[in-house]
Length: 234
Image (cartoon, rainbow, N blue to C red):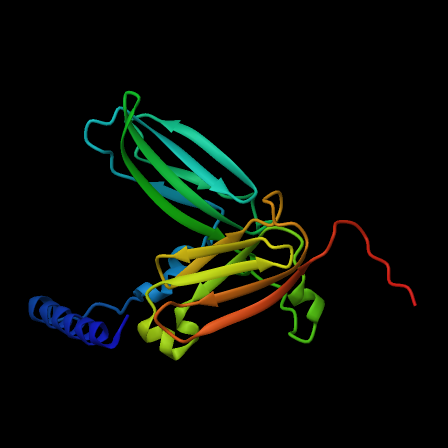
């Protein structure tokens, strides 16, 4: 949220409080409303039972729900008498692996698509009770990657980006010549790096996170070692 929007929100909030006070001589309790730059809160799962609800497209005769993650996919067909369901993203308790899921609800009139709804949701272990924290000095824990990982990005990490960023870009480049650019339409969220079975190979990878329109940039170097056990000899 930029400064102008923040001022306008404050004016609207004050007007709302005045309207309530005039009507009932009471003020409602404050509630937390996340701004656009806090969208990682909205896309984080905090339970293994995620309620899904939707409005049907006019003239639709059925729909298909596709849920695609880095570690698997799920598909189910829905009839017009169903407008909500519960998706269990993982087993009870804490998730065994982290993932970013893309949910796509496609409406059909007979066999022809007549509308699409999409959403994205991330499952990260830190949202479920205690999470292990590795010290920065513990270099192997920070610099090695073996499986699919969830990467967060947020324009609020830097003051300049917090004010001016509206999108983000993540470039992953391997020493083996594989380079992929990920462009995100917002400045905060999660992305999944599907390391396994996706043509990345092994070796060193350079990660660069930027926010177009701002000078801020984040960089990291990760090593994906060959599968198996490595021995060091002296």
